[in-house]
Amino acid sequence: MIAAALAPSGDVALHGGTDGIVRLWDFRAEREIAASPGKGWIEAIDRSDDGRFWISAGRDKTVHMWDAGVKLVRSLHGATRGIQSAAIAPDGSHVVASGGGAALLWDAASGRVRGKLEGEKLGAVRFSRDGARVVAYDATGFVRVYDVPS
Image 1 (cartoon, rainbow, N blue to C red):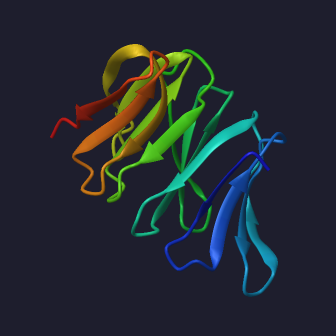
Image 2 (cartoon, helix red, strand yellow):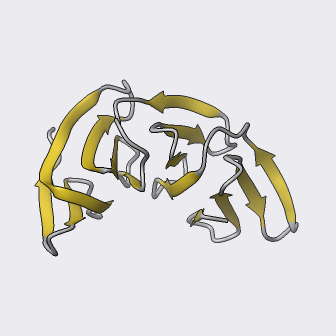
Image 3 (spheres, helix red, strand yellow):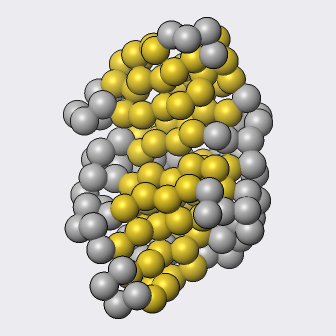
């Protein structure tokens, strides 16, 4: 396992790894609920606070957005290198991902790139609790904060 995220309820988790398969697990029933077809090494998984959406991303340069049952909703394209960190806004409205030092912000509903986050070799990315900002760590040791366009 390379990446995992826990549902708000705490009894369901999504994880993925080197085989590219994203698996949804029910801890109470101790069984796999669903699995997606694999495509590339998975480096990052996150879920919206309301539990409606999950995202996975990795070396295939694509963020995949899943519904709660792990059915593919859409794929977000535009990254030019493998993705190492990704996050979905608490309300599921935006997705951010970084890889190879660059970070992109997408509108989750349309799948369109909303912008590129400027900085020196951006790494880990996360949304603020209100979804209005993205925080990113960069290779120069700085933490940068970006406003999410409305």
